[in-house]
Image (tube, rainbow, N blue to C red; front, top):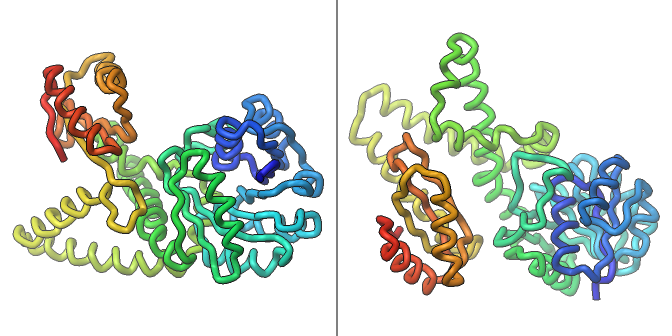
Amino acid sequence: MIKQISIIGLGLIGGSIGLAVKKNNPQIKVIGIDVKTDNLNLAIKRNAIDQGTTDLKTGVIESDIVFLATPINTMYEIAKLISPFLKKQAIVTDVGSCKVEVTNNLEKILPTTCNFVGGHPMAGSEQAGMAHADPYLFQNAVYVLTPTEKTNPKAVKDLSDLLKSIGANVIEMVPSRHDLIVAAVSHLPHLLAVNLVNSVGEYAEKDDLTLMLAAGGFRDTTRIAMGNEDIWSDIFISNVGMILQVLQTFNINLAKLESFISQKNDYEIKKIISKARRTRQEIPLKPKGLLPKLYELTLKVPDEPGIIAKIAKILSDEQINIIDIEILRVREGEEGAIRIGLKEEDDFDAAFKLLEKNNFEVKRR
């Protein structure tokens, strides 16, 4: 039975773990460890932790699970410092976005009397810090665990059970597979968003109307460029091999598109756009189980206050839970449209009928 956990680093992820554990497992004592006392005080005030300390020894000595929720480049020194004080058979896990490097290093550093399980919550925000921590951050979010042949299966199960209790969808995969996937679906998009914003920024310096004319598509595509530079620099360097591999694929495809545009090859340009659209439509239906199957409805709505609340009430009155919602931007082709995602097929059919009955124009996706 897990009686106490420690969280080292009370940023967005660490703070959210604390909030979620206290909300769903109030019997578990949560110790927060951070270099900033103001952060510890805020975490106590928000009920993310029961006790805070800046001292690593007192923070981990009695804990059954220790979360390393710091930047990757600080984890290894922290692991060395806590190693003599870890409880026998304690589980140590990290929340880093790269798993090969982290797993190789921490399996060497940590004592064999404890159990290391690599972890990566596929959840986050462009916001950072304890002030933005969210107890619901992990609900319906994928949380990847990356056990190796050295990993204790019981430790994986105990950690998995805790994560499931805070709403996460836990999956397991080997570290190398994880790193290649996240390089493609997480690290590359962030890198591209940063470069896109900086490229457009050069035009904005010459013409101040540039950013004023930025439509919803630009804002949505570049939202993640607001991420923390320390964290993302750390990620890019830690997963350099996989990122360079997916960048090579991206550059090859970009060169093809550039060539077709320069040739005014309408046929090939349309083929590329059509292929992208088909792939994009498949995202909620991941065949390997990375995400739960999502049933989607799109409905046209008037641009008026309270319209989202009205839709939510219609569905909630019938106990239909929306697990994903998106406002489809005005100037990108679907003016006044909202996309909602539902987890259950029965809810999907019932929601379609309910919304039609309430005079919404609804389409199944």
